Image (cartoon, rainbow, N blue to C red):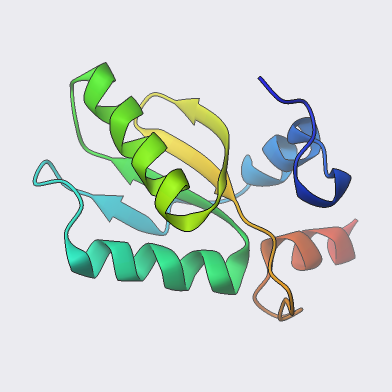
Length: 108
């Protein structure tokens, strides 16, 4: 497992920021539809660090979906606990009002 992410932001730091977040994308038992994929792309672009809730009882299905989401979006899987995954993708021009990294950093 890699210990550093894009721009040398540590996974530990990202996990601490992610702890305060609520899932903003929900994947039902029907899996990844085109609408869900579009929503994930938009959410990652706006927020950089997002939580996704996957409604599946099968651990291998959740892992497969996590890997697929990260691969399709060039994102890093930061944490996977239960039905929740935390993923990160650095934005080239993050919006300070929407980026979870910039908003959380300003609060500390």
